Length: 193
Length: 235
Image (cartoon, rainbow over all chains, first blue to last red; front, side):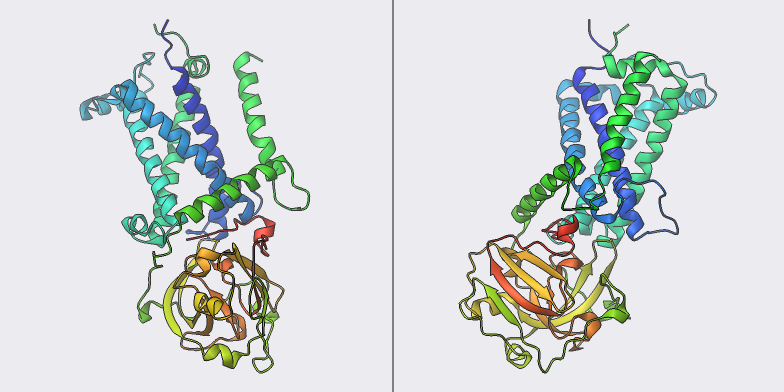
């Protein structure tokens, strides 16, 4: 029987979860060394800047490598079709239903809110990687750095892309908490109804 | 406790415990996480060396974009700055260099001089723009008969700081042994009488008050590098 979530999707999902937690945690410690705003993060990975950078530049390979596997598989397998079509009318309808806790969950199908959130976080993922590369290599990858408005602007872009991913993470966890039956299939694969 | 909870807790524990242990606080006694990070950092050195293009120049800026007042930065407070007497200063040479005769400041000042207005990016994330002038390191290394096939150029400083760079970056046209800053001779806080200015690397790879330069194939490390900062740290 076909699982709801194929093995490769589950694998890339959980590897991505590890990569995101380490990248955000170490990124917050790096941010703390030279804050862009009037606050610092109380929880971080890496107890000082050197350790945080080491974690960040080690796990970027997992984030990007795993992300590329997911994107290639999504395009090649036809999985991408689940994200489309994205109709504004459906989004409004499903969003209203979700906010009033009336949105039913159909196993193996993305509702309009899911489609928007997933496409949005994928976009944020692309931006966070590209702006991160621009910050890491502003000289060698200068065209990329210029694309983001220079080194300093790229730091802000990187920060806001991270914020979008963290916001997604919070909503994602909250939705799983509201509809806990969706969690086991992401681990075991589940069975298509 | 059901299966799901056990699995989640195991995942959380497996994720958090190695991270808590790693703080790079004792480089002489690395734990498993430190070994992993060292391995990845060495891999990133190789990637950066491959990515380094000797013909790609760091961006240059207009005089009105220079950061004023300039920002002091070191591993100590500005009141603790080491002052080197320019009159008795001698630049020592070591390693694979044919002529190791020490250099006086006057001799260095007689070499070809070039100025640059470039951006210094600190590993912490901030950046400043400054104007530095001096002799290209490549010109100097050729002049003293350095073995340019060696892997590393190392620098030792009057304040005990030390660092090292790869030979390709050392020969980059914007890598200079700076003697001036903002159009005037270097001041002690900014690395008098001689410092490395390398705009293709992060700020901590720009050692100040350099008193010895050596060319070697033995990895020389660095003050911050030995504590866990990535060695190549290219921009």
